[in-house]
Length: 108
Image: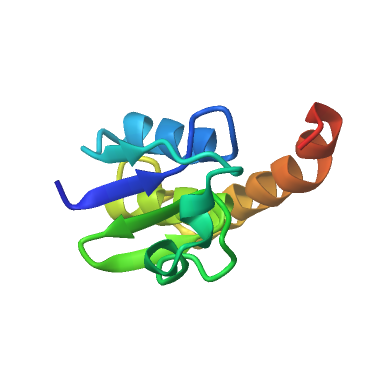
């Protein structure tokens, strides 16, 4: 399996796990907690220098920030990615809206 998702489901990693499921991408989950000392260890900091969750490693490619990861997985799969530039703009719009409007209301 080439895709590993780091982060416990009860965190922003939920977005990434959900996107991987919707896209039909096989993955392994390392359910690290935001309190887990492993996220401050050198091995994990090589994946995410911020020492936070979530992050992924996809066939050697490391990426962090849940919304960037979900957009990446959507495009990689081809199943969730819009077919034209206007569709991409709408995807970016709703992604940013969720981060700025919804997350605060949910206590994120």
